Amino acid sequence: MSEFEGLPKREEVPEKLTWNLEVIFKTDKDFFISYRDLESKITGISAFKGKLSESSEILLNGIQYILEVSNQLETIYVYAHLKNDQDTINTVYQAMFEQASLLVTKISESISWFEPELLEIPEEVLSEFLKDNSELATYQHFIDRLTALRKHVLTAESESLLAGAGELFGASSRTFNILNNADIQFPTIEDKDGNAMQLSHGVYGQVMESTDRLLREAGFKALYKVYKGLNNTFASTLSSHIKYHNYNAAVHHYGSAREAALSAGHIPEAVYDTLLSVVDENLHLLHRYVALRKKLLSVSELHMYDMYTPIMGEATIQFTYNEAKETVLKALEPLGEEYQAVLKQAFKDRWIDVVENEGKRSGAYSSGAYETQPYILLNWHDSLNHLYTLVHELGHSVHSYFTRKNQPYVYGDYSIFLAEIASTTNENLLTEYLLKTQTKPEIRSYILNHYLDGFKGTIFRQTQFAEFEHFIHQESAKETPLTADFLNQAYKKLNSKYYGPSVSQDPGIIYEWSRIPHFYYNYYVYQYSTGFSAATALADKILKDKTGKSLENFLVYLKSGSSDYPIDVMKKAGVDMTKKTYLEEAMTVFKLRLDELEESARSKINK
Image (cartoon, rainbow, N blue to C red; front, side, top):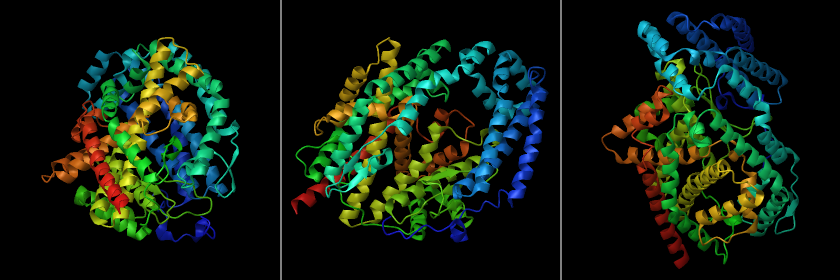
């Protein structure tokens, strides 16, 4: 960024590098026409309240009306948020986004009665409705999904009381967020040349990737000195939040907080247990990679602050945006002509907002609504990392495109459990393509290290978090006090188990649990690990299967949306995530790429 002369204003960006939002609303005036039309429909929702059980026709009409309102709302909201994100300085679009957000709140409140009322309809009555009205058949899975957890829903009065206490139950999480993001004060550190740097959450990530070891050490020690000083406070917030998870599960008649959390997505607990088991059996691979990291960094002691710095030097390969587009098309050729056609449409029809401009939201994402194209936000720079970002977000967008083209609106989305699989499959295919086409040893080693670091950070590290999260829920349920010392020692033991004997046990690492916001998300992080593993296995199947059956299964997954439970969708893709095979296949790929990097390292050292 030191060489950057300044960002262009939004109006200075060439049109071909911006997304085309005129296909949603030709003008902002059209947006407000739709907005006012939707506002007028809100009162119509209440016409169905208290009447769903009267007849199959009323139930059908109620479902269809609410889905129609939700569909229109999504289109309005997506247009507003995309307009705002492309230039957050523009006050017109700031206001538009605020109005759209307010409309979301209004409509959410207006339909909040629907699910509780549906659950109050006796099962035998719902069965008769579905038998008598053939049009309701489309909504069979939608109804099943809502009513499957009927036995865990309390009386309307009890649920209302719990909902009313939501602010109180969420206090620990909010306190953590405020303390961790707003009130916490980090010190200034210095690099090897004596240059001062103000530490922050974002800066810390950059520091850990720095090649300046003294800076990494200073950043690590300074950060955890702050968390040590707040150790008891963070233990209190986390302990209280875990108690809430356990309490909420118990009052809803679940056997555990984990069962309650996973049941929301209809995920069997076996998926979680199998993940922990297979990762534990393969920790020797992580230990090998850590040992290789120590060797290549040429350090007598490897510390936790050495885990993210590049071990193969800086990248010697870059891609312009046009080169990246060509590379993506070639890398994803194994996904077939139908998939290729959508990729070409994405580039041709301007689904992608490419370059950084003044006021543009940072980062990257894929967005869109059922009635729109998928849209991708980038802030492009010529690098290997941005090539991976492009192929990743295209994975999300093509998944969304196929889902919306093949499912009715009611099933036109997909769960978080499924979301990262499509995007990460693309990343795996890109890695394989680059390894086939790049012959220079230093570039191949960089690509291998990029993959192995991603695997380490996603499968091993997130599973470590998942194991810790489950352990503290279990201990709290047994009425073990989650004191600061208890959490510190438990985390220290787990961290040592995961990273193995090649890493020195830095005193500060025992406080790492206290800075991880995901521990307040309620059994969320395991999905990163399962998704990455499934994607690795799928990419491997697609590349090796000459019959085309694996690709056919993959496309079925992309087109299924939420028309079935996530576990069953993945079975159609050829991956049974209740069994360990897909995890073992992912570990096999990791081992093969680790073998090659170790061999490359030996050659480098022997020269």
